Length: 100
Image (cartoon, rainbow, N blue to C red; front, top):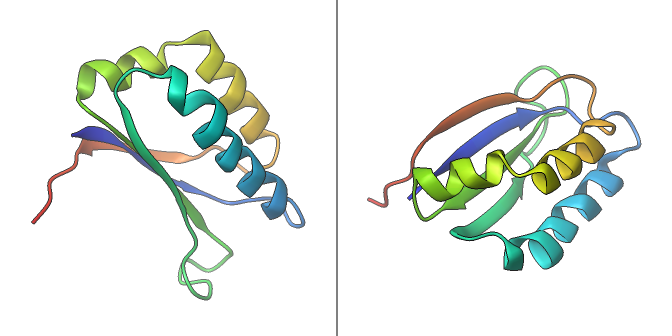
């Protein structure tokens, strides 16, 4: 499996909208995206990074299907909507997911 983990910072009072967009992706985009396995919005307890921080996690079958989604204009449009609710650009880490 392949995918990404992004550290994000929602704007104050924008978390609910961010969570709504994550749910929208799961219900509306995911069924149309080849290779999409799972997506998560992880919210750590407290603020271990000095300010409220969330993590967006997306898991795909392989790197090819992940890249196809990343290059899809519909995904870019969804990302731009999400970005409106963030204080700054996400910090992306792409790579392989392995269970252990």
